[in-house]
Amino acid sequence: MNYQRGISLNGLMIAGAIFAVVAILGARVAPEWIEYGAIDKAVKTTAGDPALKEGTMAQVRAAYDKRAEIDTIKSMPGADLDITKEGGELVIAYAYMRKVPLFANVSLVFDFEGSSAKK
Image 1 (tube, rainbow, N blue to C red):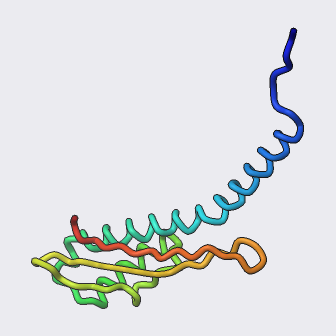
Image 2 (cartoon, rainbow, N blue to C red):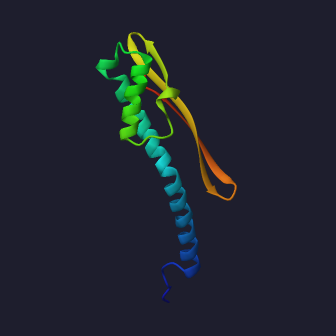
Image 3 (cartoon, rainbow, N blue to C red):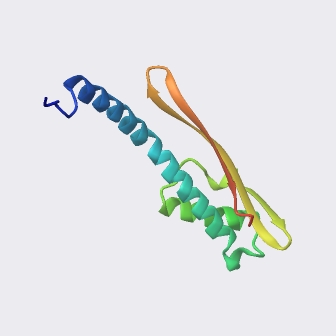
């Protein structure tokens, strides 16, 4: 007796719907995570800049803002950075929240935070 193998039309439609939901969710969330990575990179690069070791807070914020402008970072302005010195090293910390609307009144909320401190 020969049994048929493969996927039924109903199974294909359900799998397609699941794939579509995951793809839409990924398309909405991915830009936020990419921007978080850009912010983290800009903060660590700014903190590691030897020219800013003895700089003022205004100089550090201006240097970050220049990097943020290049990377088109809009979620984290330089004015919101927490700048300190620990052990002679410049430490820049940040925290921000992003709300990503999905559909109707459903949204995802992300609380991003990070620091240039070495762990």
